[in-house]
Length: 355
Length: 155
Image (spheres, each protein chain N blue to C red):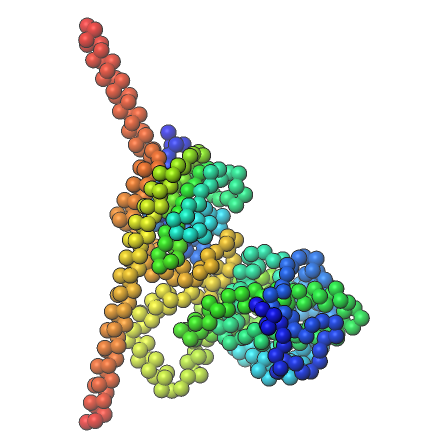
Protein backbone atom coordinates (compact mmCIF):
# COMPACT_ATOMS: atom_id res chain seq x y z
CA UNK A 1 0.00 0.00 0.00
CA UNK A 2 1.63 3.18 -1.08
CA UNK A 3 1.04 6.74 -0.07
CA UNK A 4 -1.53 7.17 -2.80
CA UNK A 5 -3.82 4.83 -0.90
CA UNK A 6 -3.78 7.20 2.06
CA UNK A 7 -5.18 10.15 0.14
CA UNK A 8 -8.92 10.57 0.11
CA UNK A 9 -10.63 10.50 -3.23
CA UNK A 10 -12.61 13.49 -4.43
CA UNK A 11 -15.91 11.73 -3.80
CA UNK A 12 -15.03 11.10 -0.20
CA UNK A 13 -13.97 14.61 0.69
CA UNK A 14 -17.21 16.24 1.60
CA UNK A 15 -19.31 16.50 4.68
CA UNK A 16 -17.68 16.72 8.07
CA UNK A 17 -14.06 16.14 8.79
CA UNK A 18 -12.59 14.94 12.05
CA UNK A 19 -10.69 17.74 13.71
CA UNK A 20 -7.81 15.94 15.29
CA UNK A 21 -7.26 13.16 12.81
CA UNK A 22 -6.23 12.66 9.26
CA UNK A 23 -9.24 12.55 6.98
CA UNK A 24 -8.87 8.90 6.08
CA UNK A 25 -7.58 5.99 8.05
CA UNK A 26 -4.58 5.02 5.99
CA UNK A 27 -3.82 1.52 4.84
CA UNK A 28 -0.42 0.06 5.61
CA UNK A 29 -0.21 1.95 8.86
CA UNK A 30 -2.03 -0.55 11.01
CA UNK A 31 0.62 -1.23 13.61
CA UNK A 32 0.09 -3.76 16.34
CA UNK A 33 -3.02 -4.17 18.42
CA UNK A 34 -2.48 -4.65 22.12
CA UNK A 35 -4.98 -5.45 24.86
CA UNK A 36 -4.40 -1.99 26.36
CA UNK A 37 -5.23 -0.33 23.05
CA UNK A 38 -8.31 -2.48 22.75
CA UNK A 39 -9.34 -1.51 26.26
CA UNK A 40 -9.20 2.19 25.39
CA UNK A 41 -11.60 1.55 22.51
CA UNK A 42 -13.86 -0.62 24.66
CA UNK A 43 -14.03 1.99 27.41
CA UNK A 44 -14.91 4.76 25.00
CA UNK A 45 -17.49 2.50 23.37
CA UNK A 46 -19.04 1.91 26.79
CA UNK A 47 -19.06 5.62 27.39
CA UNK A 48 -20.76 6.22 24.08
CA UNK A 49 -23.43 3.56 24.18
CA UNK A 50 -23.51 2.09 27.66
CA UNK A 51 -22.58 -1.23 26.12
CA UNK A 52 -20.09 -2.97 28.39
CA UNK A 53 -19.65 -5.85 25.95
CA UNK A 54 -19.94 -8.08 29.00
CA UNK A 55 -23.27 -9.65 28.19
CA UNK A 56 -24.16 -10.48 24.65
CA UNK A 57 -27.72 -11.56 25.35
CA UNK A 58 -29.29 -8.14 25.60
CA UNK A 59 -28.34 -4.91 23.92
CA UNK A 60 -27.77 -2.58 26.84
CA UNK A 61 -29.16 0.94 26.68
CA UNK A 62 -30.64 0.63 23.26
CA UNK A 63 -31.57 4.30 23.18
CA UNK A 64 -27.96 5.45 23.34
CA UNK A 65 -26.83 2.82 20.93
CA UNK A 66 -29.66 3.82 18.60
CA UNK A 67 -28.61 7.45 18.79
CA UNK A 68 -25.04 6.57 17.92
CA UNK A 69 -26.12 4.30 15.06
CA UNK A 70 -28.53 6.94 13.75
CA UNK A 71 -25.72 9.46 13.55
CA UNK A 72 -23.43 7.06 11.74
CA UNK A 73 -26.17 6.16 9.30
CA UNK A 74 -27.06 9.80 8.76
CA UNK A 75 -23.48 10.58 7.82
CA UNK A 76 -23.22 7.43 5.76
CA UNK A 77 -26.29 8.52 3.85
CA UNK A 78 -24.13 11.11 2.12
CA UNK A 79 -22.48 8.23 0.28
CA UNK A 80 -25.36 6.43 -1.46
CA UNK A 81 -23.22 3.58 -2.75
CA UNK A 82 -21.82 2.75 0.67
CA UNK A 83 -25.18 3.28 2.35
CA UNK A 84 -26.82 0.85 -0.05
CA UNK A 85 -24.14 -1.75 0.58
CA UNK A 86 -24.49 -1.39 4.33
CA UNK A 87 -27.66 -3.36 4.67
CA UNK A 88 -28.48 -6.93 5.63
CA UNK A 89 -29.68 -8.58 2.45
CA UNK A 90 -31.50 -11.61 3.67
CA UNK A 91 -33.08 -10.45 6.89
CA UNK A 92 -36.66 -9.67 5.95
CA UNK A 93 -38.06 -9.94 9.45
CA UNK A 94 -37.29 -6.40 10.57
CA UNK A 95 -37.50 -2.93 9.17
CA UNK A 96 -34.68 -1.58 7.09
CA UNK A 97 -33.47 0.87 9.75
CA UNK A 98 -33.64 -1.66 12.56
CA UNK A 99 -31.65 -4.17 10.51
CA UNK A 100 -29.00 -1.55 9.84
CA UNK A 101 -28.79 -0.73 13.56
CA UNK A 102 -28.30 -4.38 14.37
CA UNK A 103 -25.70 -4.76 11.66
CA UNK A 104 -23.89 -1.69 12.93
CA UNK A 105 -23.87 -3.04 16.47
CA UNK A 106 -22.64 -6.44 15.32
CA UNK A 107 -19.92 -4.91 13.17
CA UNK A 108 -18.55 -2.65 15.89
CA UNK A 109 -18.65 -5.45 18.43
CA UNK A 110 -16.70 -7.58 15.99
CA UNK A 111 -14.12 -4.83 15.58
CA UNK A 112 -13.81 -4.51 19.33
CA UNK A 113 -13.24 -8.23 19.68
CA UNK A 114 -9.86 -7.79 17.96
CA UNK A 115 -7.67 -7.78 21.03
CA UNK A 116 -4.24 -8.53 19.58
CA UNK A 117 -2.35 -8.89 16.32
CA UNK A 118 -1.77 -12.63 16.51
CA UNK A 119 -1.55 -14.68 13.36
CA UNK A 120 -4.85 -16.34 14.18
CA UNK A 121 -6.68 -13.02 14.37
CA UNK A 122 -5.01 -11.85 11.18
CA UNK A 123 -6.06 -14.97 9.33
CA UNK A 124 -9.63 -14.60 10.49
CA UNK A 125 -9.72 -10.96 9.43
CA UNK A 126 -8.24 -11.81 6.04
CA UNK A 127 -10.90 -14.43 5.63
CA UNK A 128 -13.61 -11.93 6.50
CA UNK A 129 -12.03 -9.47 4.10
CA UNK A 130 -12.08 -11.98 1.28
CA UNK A 131 -15.74 -12.70 1.95
CA UNK A 132 -16.53 -9.00 1.82
CA UNK A 133 -14.57 -8.50 -1.39
CA UNK A 134 -16.46 -11.31 -2.99
CA UNK A 135 -19.71 -9.42 -2.62
CA UNK A 136 -18.23 -6.27 -4.06
CA UNK A 137 -17.12 -4.40 -0.96
CA UNK A 138 -14.14 -2.27 -1.92
CA UNK A 139 -11.37 -0.51 -0.06
CA UNK A 140 -13.09 2.77 -0.83
CA UNK A 141 -16.34 1.60 0.81
CA UNK A 142 -14.49 0.49 3.89
CA UNK A 143 -12.47 3.68 4.11
CA UNK A 144 -15.59 5.79 3.92
CA UNK A 145 -17.30 3.70 6.55
CA UNK A 146 -14.30 3.95 8.86
CA UNK A 147 -14.11 7.68 8.29
CA UNK A 148 -17.75 8.10 9.19
CA UNK A 149 -17.33 5.93 12.25
CA UNK A 150 -14.34 7.94 13.42
CA UNK A 151 -16.13 11.24 12.92
CA UNK A 152 -19.13 10.01 14.89
CA UNK A 153 -16.99 8.66 17.70
CA UNK A 154 -15.13 11.95 17.89
CA UNK A 155 -18.28 14.08 17.86
CA UNK A 156 -20.12 11.92 20.35
CA UNK A 157 -17.25 11.66 22.80
CA UNK A 158 -16.81 15.42 22.92
CA UNK A 159 -14.08 16.40 25.35
CA UNK A 160 -13.66 12.75 26.36
CA UNK A 161 -12.40 12.10 22.87
CA UNK A 162 -8.77 12.77 23.58
CA UNK A 163 -6.07 12.30 21.02
CA UNK A 164 -5.07 9.05 22.71
CA UNK A 165 -8.58 7.61 22.47
CA UNK A 166 -9.09 8.63 18.87
CA UNK A 167 -5.67 7.35 17.90
CA UNK A 168 -6.55 4.00 19.46
CA UNK A 169 -9.73 3.83 17.37
CA UNK A 170 -7.84 4.83 14.28
CA UNK A 171 -5.16 2.22 14.86
CA UNK A 172 -7.77 -0.48 15.41
CA UNK A 173 -9.62 0.44 12.23
CA UNK A 174 -6.40 0.67 10.26
CA UNK A 175 -5.32 -2.76 11.43
CA UNK A 176 -8.65 -4.29 10.48
CA UNK A 177 -8.61 -2.63 7.05
CA UNK A 178 -5.04 -3.67 6.43
CA UNK A 179 -5.87 -7.30 7.13
CA UNK A 180 -9.17 -7.13 5.24
CA UNK A 181 -7.46 -6.19 2.01
CA UNK A 182 -4.28 -8.10 2.65
CA UNK A 183 -4.60 -10.41 -0.31
CA UNK A 184 -7.18 -8.74 -2.50
CA UNK A 185 -5.34 -9.41 -5.74
CA UNK A 186 -5.45 -13.16 -5.26
CA UNK A 187 -9.18 -13.31 -4.91
CA UNK A 188 -10.41 -10.92 -7.54
CA UNK A 189 -10.68 -13.68 -10.15
CA UNK A 190 -12.86 -15.87 -7.96
CA UNK A 191 -15.91 -13.65 -8.16
CA UNK A 192 -16.16 -13.98 -11.92
CA UNK A 193 -15.66 -17.74 -11.73
CA UNK A 194 -18.36 -18.55 -9.21
CA UNK A 195 -20.70 -15.69 -8.38
CA UNK A 196 -23.27 -17.96 -6.74
CA UNK A 197 -20.79 -19.38 -4.28
CA UNK A 198 -19.52 -15.93 -3.54
CA UNK A 199 -22.92 -14.69 -2.43
CA UNK A 200 -23.01 -17.20 0.38
CA UNK A 201 -20.68 -15.39 2.79
CA UNK A 202 -22.73 -12.24 2.85
CA UNK A 203 -25.88 -14.20 3.43
CA UNK A 204 -24.16 -16.00 6.27
CA UNK A 205 -23.09 -12.71 7.72
CA UNK A 206 -26.31 -10.80 7.48
CA UNK A 207 -28.87 -13.38 8.46
CA UNK A 208 -30.26 -14.35 11.84
CA UNK A 209 -29.20 -11.09 13.38
CA UNK A 210 -30.60 -11.92 16.80
CA UNK A 211 -28.51 -15.03 16.98
CA UNK A 212 -25.52 -13.13 15.75
CA UNK A 213 -25.97 -10.62 18.53
CA UNK A 214 -25.59 -13.35 21.03
CA UNK A 215 -22.62 -14.80 19.24
CA UNK A 216 -20.57 -11.81 18.27
CA UNK A 217 -18.59 -11.59 21.47
CA UNK A 218 -15.39 -12.90 19.93
CA UNK A 219 -13.73 -13.60 16.65
CA UNK A 220 -13.91 -17.32 17.24
CA UNK A 221 -17.65 -17.20 17.81
CA UNK A 222 -18.10 -15.52 14.45
CA UNK A 223 -16.27 -18.41 12.88
CA UNK A 224 -18.55 -20.84 14.67
CA UNK A 225 -21.54 -18.94 13.39
CA UNK A 226 -20.27 -19.25 9.86
CA UNK A 227 -20.01 -22.98 10.28
CA UNK A 228 -23.47 -23.24 11.75
CA UNK A 229 -25.27 -21.30 9.06
CA UNK A 230 -23.36 -22.51 6.07
CA UNK A 231 -25.76 -25.01 4.48
CA UNK A 232 -28.86 -22.94 5.03
CA UNK A 233 -27.20 -19.82 3.70
CA UNK A 234 -25.76 -21.46 0.64
CA UNK A 235 -29.26 -22.44 -0.40
CA UNK A 236 -30.60 -18.98 0.36
CA UNK A 237 -27.83 -17.24 -1.54
CA UNK A 238 -28.18 -19.55 -4.49
CA UNK A 239 -31.92 -18.90 -4.68
CA UNK A 240 -31.40 -15.14 -4.33
CA UNK A 241 -28.94 -15.24 -7.15
CA UNK A 242 -31.22 -17.33 -9.32
CA UNK A 243 -34.10 -14.89 -8.88
CA UNK A 244 -31.91 -11.99 -9.88
CA UNK A 245 -31.02 -13.56 -13.22
CA UNK A 246 -32.92 -13.05 -16.47
CA UNK A 247 -35.38 -15.83 -17.30
CA UNK A 248 -33.43 -16.91 -20.35
CA UNK A 249 -30.26 -17.54 -18.40
CA UNK A 250 -32.09 -19.36 -15.63
CA UNK A 251 -33.63 -21.83 -18.04
CA UNK A 252 -30.26 -22.54 -19.61
CA UNK A 253 -28.86 -23.06 -16.13
CA UNK A 254 -31.63 -25.53 -15.40
CA UNK A 255 -30.96 -27.56 -18.52
CA UNK A 256 -27.28 -27.75 -17.76
CA UNK A 257 -27.98 -28.39 -14.10
CA UNK A 258 -30.25 -31.34 -14.83
CA UNK A 259 -27.87 -32.85 -17.32
CA UNK A 260 -24.75 -32.56 -15.25
CA UNK A 261 -25.66 -32.08 -11.64
CA UNK A 262 -23.01 -34.52 -10.47
CA UNK A 263 -20.31 -32.83 -12.48
CA UNK A 264 -21.37 -29.40 -11.23
CA UNK A 265 -21.22 -30.49 -7.61
CA UNK A 266 -17.90 -32.20 -8.12
CA UNK A 267 -16.63 -29.13 -9.93
CA UNK A 268 -17.41 -26.93 -6.93
CA UNK A 269 -15.64 -29.32 -4.61
CA UNK A 270 -12.51 -29.32 -6.74
CA UNK A 271 -12.54 -25.64 -7.65
CA UNK A 272 -13.60 -23.77 -4.53
CA UNK A 273 -13.79 -24.05 -0.76
CA UNK A 274 -17.05 -23.72 1.08
CA UNK A 275 -17.63 -21.00 3.66
CA UNK A 276 -17.23 -23.41 6.56
CA UNK A 277 -14.00 -24.74 5.13
CA UNK A 278 -12.58 -21.26 4.82
CA UNK A 279 -13.67 -20.54 8.36
CA UNK A 280 -11.95 -23.71 9.47
CA UNK A 281 -8.83 -22.55 7.71
CA UNK A 282 -9.02 -19.25 9.51
CA UNK A 283 -9.25 -20.93 12.88
CA UNK A 284 -5.98 -22.86 12.57
CA UNK A 285 -3.20 -22.23 15.06
CA UNK A 286 -0.40 -23.11 12.68
CA UNK A 287 0.86 -20.87 9.86
CA UNK A 288 -0.52 -21.71 6.43
CA UNK A 289 1.02 -21.51 2.96
CA UNK A 290 0.76 -18.30 0.96
CA UNK A 291 -1.26 -20.18 -1.65
CA UNK A 292 -3.25 -22.23 0.83
CA UNK A 293 -6.54 -22.39 -1.07
CA UNK A 294 -4.85 -23.28 -4.33
CA UNK A 295 -2.86 -25.90 -2.45
CA UNK A 296 -5.94 -27.55 -0.99
CA UNK A 297 -7.72 -27.55 -4.33
CA UNK A 298 -4.68 -29.13 -5.97
CA UNK A 299 -4.62 -31.76 -3.25
CA UNK A 300 -8.27 -32.53 -3.84
CA UNK A 301 -7.66 -32.86 -7.54
CA UNK A 302 -5.25 -35.71 -6.88
CA UNK A 303 -8.22 -37.61 -5.41
CA UNK A 304 -6.01 -39.23 -2.81
CA UNK A 305 -7.72 -37.82 0.28
CA UNK A 306 -9.93 -40.29 2.09
CA UNK A 307 -9.18 -42.90 -0.51
CA UNK A 308 -8.43 -46.40 0.68
CA UNK A 309 -5.18 -46.23 2.65
CA UNK A 310 -3.76 -49.39 1.09
CA UNK A 311 -2.50 -48.03 -2.19
CA UNK A 312 0.37 -50.34 -3.25
CA UNK A 313 2.10 -47.61 -5.24
CA UNK A 314 2.44 -45.38 -2.18
CA UNK A 315 2.84 -48.21 0.31
CA UNK A 316 5.95 -49.34 -1.48
CA UNK A 317 7.54 -45.93 -0.90
CA UNK A 318 6.65 -45.96 2.78
CA UNK A 319 8.10 -49.43 3.18
CA UNK A 320 11.17 -48.46 1.23
CA UNK A 321 11.60 -45.37 3.39
CA UNK A 322 11.26 -47.33 6.60
CA UNK A 323 13.84 -49.79 5.34
CA UNK A 324 16.24 -47.12 4.15
CA UNK A 325 16.22 -44.81 7.12
CA UNK A 326 16.06 -47.24 9.96
CA UNK A 327 15.42 -50.72 11.07
CA UNK A 328 11.84 -51.66 11.52
CA UNK A 329 10.59 -53.59 14.52
CA UNK A 330 9.87 -56.73 12.59
CA UNK A 331 13.22 -56.75 10.85
CA UNK A 332 15.08 -56.16 14.09
CA UNK A 333 13.12 -58.94 15.73
CA UNK A 334 13.93 -61.23 12.82
CA UNK A 335 17.64 -60.50 13.11
CA UNK A 336 17.52 -61.21 16.82
CA UNK A 337 15.74 -64.51 16.30
CA UNK A 338 18.21 -65.49 13.60
CA UNK A 339 21.09 -64.55 15.88
CA UNK A 340 19.75 -66.71 18.70
CA UNK A 341 19.10 -69.59 16.27
CA UNK A 342 22.64 -69.31 14.95
CA UNK A 343 23.99 -69.46 18.46
CA UNK A 344 21.95 -72.57 19.15
CA UNK A 345 23.09 -74.26 15.94
CA UNK A 346 26.70 -73.38 16.61
CA UNK A 347 26.52 -74.69 20.14
CA UNK A 348 24.93 -77.97 18.95
CA UNK A 349 27.55 -78.37 16.23
CA UNK A 350 30.39 -77.63 18.60
CA UNK A 351 28.94 -80.11 21.10
CA UNK A 352 28.77 -82.79 18.39
CA UNK A 353 32.31 -82.10 17.30
CA UNK A 354 33.48 -82.31 20.89
CA UNK A 355 31.90 -85.69 21.43
CA UNK B 1 13.02 -53.43 20.47
CA UNK B 2 10.03 -51.30 19.63
CA UNK B 3 11.65 -48.17 21.05
CA UNK B 4 14.05 -48.28 18.13
CA UNK B 5 11.48 -48.59 15.39
CA UNK B 6 11.19 -45.97 12.69
CA UNK B 7 8.05 -44.33 11.39
CA UNK B 8 7.87 -43.46 7.74
CA UNK B 9 4.79 -41.86 6.23
CA UNK B 10 3.33 -40.15 3.21
CA UNK B 11 1.18 -37.41 4.69
CA UNK B 12 -1.38 -35.27 2.88
CA UNK B 13 -2.15 -31.98 4.60
CA UNK B 14 -5.82 -31.12 4.30
CA UNK B 15 -7.53 -27.97 5.64
CA UNK B 16 -7.46 -28.94 9.28
CA UNK B 17 -6.12 -32.48 9.36
CA UNK B 18 -3.33 -34.71 8.19
CA UNK B 19 -4.31 -37.72 6.13
CA UNK B 20 -1.80 -40.56 6.29
CA UNK B 21 -1.89 -41.91 2.80
CA UNK B 22 0.67 -44.56 3.58
CA UNK B 23 2.58 -45.28 6.74
CA UNK B 24 4.88 -47.74 8.46
CA UNK B 25 5.23 -47.80 12.23
CA UNK B 26 1.91 -46.13 13.12
CA UNK B 27 -1.66 -47.23 12.72
CA UNK B 28 -3.72 -44.03 12.67
CA UNK B 29 -5.05 -42.67 9.40
CA UNK B 30 -5.56 -39.02 10.32
CA UNK B 31 -4.52 -36.42 12.84
CA UNK B 32 -5.25 -32.74 13.54
CA UNK B 33 -3.12 -30.22 11.70
CA UNK B 34 -2.54 -27.95 14.69
CA UNK B 35 0.82 -28.57 16.30
CA UNK B 36 1.88 -31.13 13.71
CA UNK B 37 5.32 -31.40 12.12
CA UNK B 38 3.94 -31.66 8.61
CA UNK B 39 2.11 -28.33 8.87
CA UNK B 40 5.56 -26.74 9.07
CA UNK B 41 7.16 -29.00 6.48
CA UNK B 42 4.78 -27.78 3.76
CA UNK B 43 5.81 -24.19 4.39
CA UNK B 44 9.21 -24.89 2.87
CA UNK B 45 10.29 -24.90 -0.74
CA UNK B 46 10.56 -28.01 -2.89
CA UNK B 47 13.30 -30.38 -1.72
CA UNK B 48 13.74 -28.33 1.44
CA UNK B 49 14.05 -30.46 4.52
CA UNK B 50 12.36 -29.72 7.79
CA UNK B 51 14.28 -31.40 10.57
CA UNK B 52 13.48 -31.46 14.26
CA UNK B 53 16.23 -33.12 16.20
CA UNK B 54 14.50 -33.19 19.55
CA UNK B 55 10.79 -32.43 19.48
CA UNK B 56 10.47 -32.60 23.25
CA UNK B 57 12.38 -29.34 23.65
CA UNK B 58 10.74 -27.54 20.71
CA UNK B 59 7.84 -25.40 21.99
CA UNK B 60 6.04 -25.64 18.62
CA UNK B 61 5.51 -29.35 19.12
CA UNK B 62 5.05 -29.43 22.84
CA UNK B 63 1.39 -30.37 22.45
CA UNK B 64 1.84 -32.81 19.60
CA UNK B 65 0.19 -36.07 20.56
CA UNK B 66 3.01 -38.02 18.93
CA UNK B 67 5.49 -36.30 21.22
CA UNK B 68 3.67 -36.42 24.52
CA UNK B 69 2.01 -39.80 23.99
CA UNK B 70 2.89 -43.01 22.23
CA UNK B 71 5.05 -43.35 20.12
CA UNK B 72 6.92 -40.51 21.92
CA UNK B 73 8.59 -39.05 18.87
CA UNK B 74 11.79 -37.09 19.26
CA UNK B 75 13.28 -36.92 15.81
CA UNK B 76 11.47 -35.78 12.68
CA UNK B 77 12.65 -35.17 9.12
CA UNK B 78 10.30 -34.36 6.29
CA UNK B 79 10.23 -32.79 2.88
CA UNK B 80 7.28 -31.38 0.94
CA UNK B 81 5.41 -33.27 -1.76
CA UNK B 82 4.92 -30.78 -4.55
CA UNK B 83 2.17 -30.99 -7.13
CA UNK B 84 1.66 -28.17 -9.62
CA UNK B 85 3.82 -25.85 -7.51
CA UNK B 86 1.80 -26.49 -4.36
CA UNK B 87 3.04 -28.33 -1.29
CA UNK B 88 0.18 -30.75 -0.82
CA UNK B 89 1.80 -32.97 1.77
CA UNK B 90 5.02 -34.35 3.10
CA UNK B 91 7.17 -37.44 3.03
CA UNK B 92 8.64 -37.92 6.46
CA UNK B 93 10.42 -40.18 8.86
CA UNK B 94 10.18 -40.05 12.64
CA UNK B 95 12.12 -41.69 15.38
CA UNK B 96 11.78 -42.10 19.09
CA UNK B 97 15.40 -41.12 19.62
CA UNK B 98 17.45 -38.23 18.37
CA UNK B 99 19.60 -39.31 15.49
CA UNK B 100 22.01 -38.03 12.91
CA UNK B 101 20.59 -37.41 9.51
CA UNK B 102 23.53 -37.24 7.15
CA UNK B 103 23.68 -35.80 3.66
CA UNK B 104 23.14 -39.12 1.88
CA UNK B 105 19.99 -39.76 3.95
CA UNK B 106 18.76 -36.28 3.12
CA UNK B 107 19.33 -36.90 -0.56
CA UNK B 108 17.47 -40.19 -0.33
CA UNK B 109 14.50 -38.54 1.34
CA UNK B 110 14.19 -35.74 -1.20
CA UNK B 111 14.66 -38.14 -4.11
CA UNK B 112 11.88 -40.39 -2.87
CA UNK B 113 9.67 -37.37 -2.24
CA UNK B 114 10.16 -36.29 -5.84
CA UNK B 115 9.13 -39.72 -7.08
CA UNK B 116 6.01 -39.65 -4.91
CA UNK B 117 5.22 -36.14 -6.12
CA UNK B 118 5.43 -37.33 -9.71
CA UNK B 119 2.89 -40.07 -9.04
CA UNK B 120 0.57 -37.59 -7.39
CA UNK B 121 0.94 -35.17 -10.26
CA UNK B 122 0.03 -37.94 -12.68
CA UNK B 123 -3.10 -38.72 -10.68
CA UNK B 124 -4.09 -35.06 -10.81
CA UNK B 125 -3.45 -34.79 -14.54
CA UNK B 126 -5.59 -37.84 -15.10
CA UNK B 127 -8.40 -36.35 -13.06
CA UNK B 128 -8.26 -33.04 -14.95
CA UNK B 129 -8.24 -34.90 -18.25
CA UNK B 130 -11.30 -36.89 -17.18
CA UNK B 131 -13.05 -33.67 -16.20
CA UNK B 132 -12.23 -32.16 -19.56
CA UNK B 133 -13.65 -35.19 -21.32
CA UNK B 134 -16.82 -35.07 -19.22
CA UNK B 135 -17.27 -31.38 -19.93
CA UNK B 136 -16.80 -32.05 -23.65
CA UNK B 137 -19.49 -34.73 -23.54
CA UNK B 138 -21.94 -32.32 -21.92
CA UNK B 139 -21.27 -29.67 -24.53
CA UNK B 140 -21.94 -32.25 -27.25
CA UNK B 141 -25.14 -33.33 -25.50
CA UNK B 142 -26.32 -29.72 -25.36
CA UNK B 143 -25.52 -29.17 -29.00
CA UNK B 144 -27.53 -32.27 -29.95
CA UNK B 145 -30.37 -31.09 -27.76
CA UNK B 146 -30.31 -27.62 -29.32
CA UNK B 147 -30.33 -29.06 -32.87
CA UNK B 148 -33.27 -31.34 -32.02
CA UNK B 149 -35.18 -28.34 -30.67
CA UNK B 150 -34.38 -26.34 -33.78
CA UNK B 151 -35.63 -29.20 -35.95
CA UNK B 152 -38.86 -29.52 -33.94
CA UNK B 153 -39.48 -25.75 -34.14
CA UNK B 154 -38.89 -25.67 -37.91
CA UNK B 155 -41.46 -28.46 -38.32
